[in-house]
Image 1: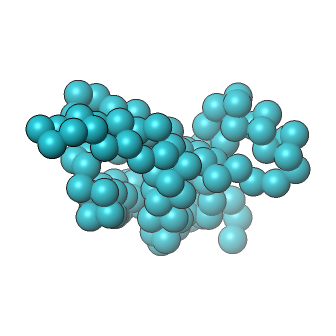
Image 2: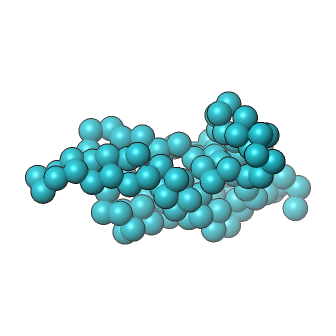
Length: 117
């Protein structure tokens, strides 16, 4: 659960909702071929269930009252990685802030692979 406390009370949003929101925003960006497994637990869950996990490639944590998002992506061959990562940072930050009202402190993008198109 992502939990942020403000003057009016506590806001809790499930980790799965955030993961789906962030993964969808990132995968819509040009050049992103897919999401990569970002932790051993994600890999184990995917292997045991036989289907893709909802939070694949996404880790969200709080830093004070702001969010820090780590994304692990696979990019298409021949695309400008710098341009893709900048696009993802802006799109994910904007999407999360619009959908939840939470402030995003940082979006870290890790390119874990390249896929031929």
